[in-house]
Image (cartoon, rainbow, N blue to C red; front, side, top):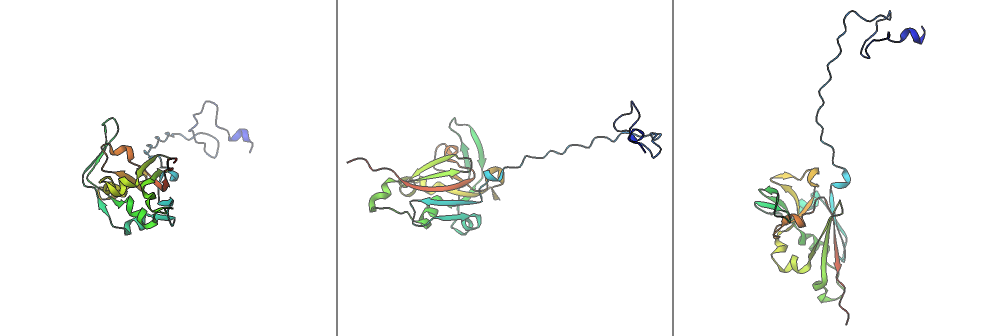
Length: 198
């Protein structure tokens, strides 16, 4: 059979089906289009945190995955409004659950050349998207801010989903909580500020 004899007759719609003889069947109704299901785009895995690494001026580099975080003493925030710089409400939560940022530092142990170098220590908390916030040693260990600086993994009794980064960080003691909220927290790096020249 030649290719020409297999082609649809001129003027036939693309949905016309041919019978074995090459003639269109007596009655063929086109199929109705299938409804399109709404599919949320997947969050790239690179923007989801599965572990937090503590490095820098520490005695031992540590990596905390979700299971390791859940074995540490937990803390609940209670009701929390996450507010941005303009004062706009970003979200409201009944509670976040997590562990104090300082608890992770205590496990890794600060490595300080001199006893009083803790006064120069600060921590950079970095998310998977590069967003970075800073806490000084004094904030974490010498003010109420440290009580509410939490590495979180649950909100309102549910694990943080991929849209929320899996593991995050919030500072509940801040007036504008959203400014030091880190989604998909990947790294806590400890540094020492330069000493002033003598």
